Amino acid sequence: MSSEFAFIDRLRLLATDPAARGLDDDVAVLGDLVLTHDMIAEGVHFLPTDPPASVGWKLVAVNLSDLAGKGAEPLAALMGMTLSGDSEWDDRFLAGVAAACETYGLSLVGGDTIALPPEAPRVLSLTAVGRGGNAIPSRSGGAPGDALWLAGTLGDAALGLKTLRDDSESEGPLVEAYRRPVPQLAVGKLLAPYATAMMDLSDGLLLDSSRLIAASKCGAEIDLDALPLSRAFIAELGSDRRAKLTAATGGDDYALLAALPPDFDPLSLSLPARTILARIGTLTTGEELRLFDAAGQVPLPEQLGYEHRTQDC
Amino acid sequence: MSSEFAFIDRLRLLATDPAARGLDDDVAVLGDLVLTHDMIAEGVHFLPTDPPASVGWKLVAVNLSDLAGKGAEPLAALMGMTLSGDSEWDDRFLAGVAAACETYGLSLVGGDTIALPPEAPRVLSLTAVGRGGNAIPSRSGGAPGDALWLAGTLGDAALGLKTLRDDSESEGPLVEAYRRPVPQLAVGKLLAPYATAMMDLSDGLLLDSSRLIAASKCGAEIDLDALPLSRAFIAELGSDRRAKLTAATGGDDYALLAALPPDFDPLSLSLPARTILARIGTLTTGEELRLFDAAGQVPLPEQLGYEHRTQDC
Image 1: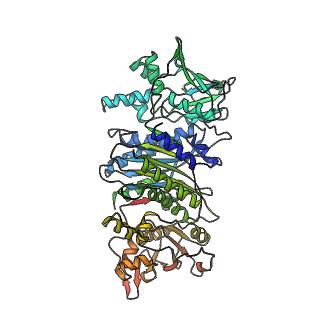
Image 2: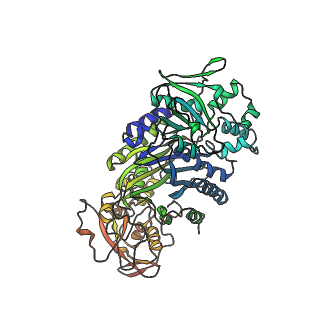
Image 3: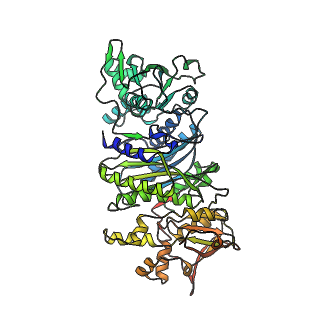
């Protein structure tokens, strides 16, 4: 167990309030409000060479993605930012925050700005508050037999990051996916009333799926062939088993993973145009995560996702 | 105007929701909920040599002090923390968080833990949510004629920090005041129904007073001789004009500053034992902050407080 997971376990001992949902979820629920708090750090969650506006966008979007995973509507946000000493950077960052807030109807209502020691990497935090619907799905309500659905495509952002690491001047849809994730708010809201369990994917499908089934105390079978891949991803990496495993273990997807009753067809909902929604598997008895493709069972890769990066709770 | 204040002004353009209170306040108000978000950074708000448990305590206490300034009762918190790679530090930090949460009835309900690049200073954030009473005083409701009252003593923490900078092994009440501030929650709740304006002091009495009168569009006269000083402060620095100016400009007091109607005597309230509550001045017409002592008017010091440190909004 990494020290990070050990630390989360100690946090759990503190978080006994029902609003904390045992920290098994990545949000807290206070009445009909859904609250989430994410931090991003330079050199960890974004690159020093990323355009500052994209960093501002990303800070807002990753928090909104947590709200999307609970079907909540964006309401208000408090932002914590470290002034970088580079006021042009700060201004452009703020323009990105503003663009995302305006796009998704999130009001910035407060926060804190602090100075950091010189040379320290920027650290930015945001607390987003959303209003949940009648049902606010947790990670823990899934049951054997439920169908696993995925909204969005996989692997684009991880591939975009790899491209940027090779050449920080790279552009294109994969780089955009990494820098400007799109929170699946509309789909999340439509799925929430039906979902037995739902979450957004930030650390890779396989790692996040393993969290969902651990919270739901069940297992899962995932069909690699059913994973939705973008044209840009396929153009770059192809769509063989290896490419699919790369897609299933890359972070920063901000797709939604939902467990739905087996007889419910989410494609019957009035989904926004161009929604990508695919049935990728089934929850099972036991507690194992198992992968399949046309050739049969596929061994789980050693690393399921971005374990070291972050742990929402 | 420092780039920090210019930045806050740009933030204000984004924060048009009434819940933001124009960022003139250090909290946001959503229905009966009061939300605040403060960040603290190693080397800026705490010393690398500070005991980790005191850092955890402080992170919670500075946020609770914002709630105290609005008379709100602590409800829930989301914490963002950077794992330091030193699990003993992290554990002891968490013990301090737990102690403060337990002392003040705050439930930790979620948050985020992230890794930072090696050698980066720790940055810790907390969003505290409180439940406000019937009246949630802002900074902007003060009017000429209101009496200015202060709950708590001044200058202890700033002197404690100075002591620690000279010798990181120092101990005593001044060091404790710096490391383990006490949020004035009970007094804040008692004063809130009567206060025309109220706030907690984080950046020094004179600087924070100037913010209160700017928001209230009035002036103020403060009587230096009325400032409450602790015995430990007086033992160290005396109580002459210079000592009082030091107390009035030091940060990290986490005392409460309240404007109250002139005919209202807060000493008639059922205050907790050992509450220190002093009338320190009066709100006036105009927009000036003026200081007096027994010898007459005292020129304002060049630096009113800890301008570079932080700006709550």
